[in-house]
Image (cartoon, rainbow, N blue to C red; front, side):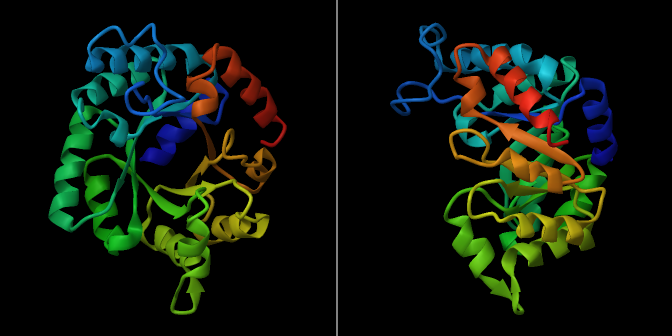
Length: 261
């Protein structure tokens, strides 16, 4: 069970920090990119070397690594090596894939996610087939972390204002997480996510669901909101992986988060 893996990793590391591993090459955008010292190599090697270095540098203060598929689409073979390095450093490997499709397609994705060695993946519930996805994932010893109330501003309209049978969509999703025995939910900590929304989700899903918390750092999320969550997994991305000293950056956040846990 992913919950047991989470407890083991957090206890051994003494940390609830997850690192979002989203490495962009300089030719993809103008800022927050892989440093020049890596980019003299082929793209695949640059992405791999940067990713492995980050994993090693942050491993003392983190319990999981979450690469986003979108940043590796041209070189997905790298993901297997990232998962292995993550496990070698005693952390959980979560694929940020936001899976959302018909059952047969989801099944194919889960086969490859398992083959690459990941422990869990993120899942979008909008196709309405969360139950079947969770069942198939658990057969493959994979955890499912459901997008419940995301941190991006557009989520306010789609997940708070939109309703299903008179219930806000985020609460409908939280209820689905509970009913399907999914393993976790993605929840933002940004300004529009009020304390009461986080409390509502926690009450709905129960005390064995992991909260993958997003939005700390450049998005301006509030660390204070962590205290409403029983099983937090607090994500950091750009503020760490593109800093001059990733180990020092994540250690500083580790000290901040300890006040709220």
